[in-house]
Image (tube, rainbow over the protein chains, first blue to last red):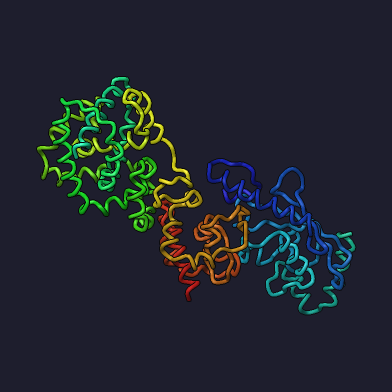
Length: 167
Length: 340
């Protein structure tokens, strides 16, 4: 039950209750995102499925990624607020915390998740991650190493990847 | 006492006819039993009623003698019960009051304090309370019956005629209900109908009345409503809350009510229990369902990501959550927070 990320299927009474619970929460977050989205980002359901969202991040100015628009996939687990959503970068990015498959290394998406967090806060954290990569908890050690050793080179490569993939 | 027995006899005759028309059913008998239970509380009141009811004297001599014996024995047992069973009534009040007629209003005011605190247990099982209460009574009555066995035998036969409907359940409790039944009939009939009615009319009119009376729920503005009855507002919530009201006091509750209207986790509306529930020092509020769920998993507060304090208390409550005891424990832990 917990492993299946796309919700909506209630096998038992317990899981049905969980689905409706998470559904209400996700709908509320959707309403709030429509009312006021965090700066430089947006998010919403991909299609009919409430549990599968698409989000966009517009990289903040002053970063090597500026001008780039990054698409993300957000998959809500059926027990959503109690388990973190799964976030995947669909746009390639030269970032030490995002691997080539798009997986994101962010503590609030793993152990640091709290049910009190929302997608809005998550998008804010991801925007912040673009500004401030964390080379000490890297997902791509090569990029982290480059970031620590030669930041200029790192930024140059990041800007080039952004031009190539994110525009 | 003379008036008493006379009117009793008349009522018996009426009852008999009513029963022959087969309108007395088991539910009614149960309702009576509740009334009988409350009747003992109201022995003194009966005298006043008798004065007003004395107008309708229509003696049926055959029964008169028997009733006199019944009455005396009843008074004896009633006096004896007054001392022993007061505590018992305070417990049964909250569960049986909905069926009790006016007599309870007196008893209710006496015991409103005790029954309020005791209502947590009894009102939870209110549906089955009739049985359990009567069980207790029959135990108590064993003692009383030793004193007045003689009167009891007569009594049993007299009322067995009148009641006509006998089943196994009643057989078990025969001693108790029949001992007090005369006064019960009397009260119901007299309170329900004006005394100036002719006797023949009484027969037809007021027999169905007790039925309707018994089924009716108390209205909040009812003058005879027992004070021990919980108000409707309180009934909406769990009985545990009543316990908390008296347990931890109104002050902590007043502080605990937050302006937050819905749980930030599940977005469901917070009820009173939830909004007065503060599980963590950081002040992050959530509903009890989400809190339980979090305790089952990592047990960290969503607001500050620290482990929930009072782990021993909450975990202990978590174990028997289904029994409804844990919210009370939570409340206690919460009140500790506000005091410190």
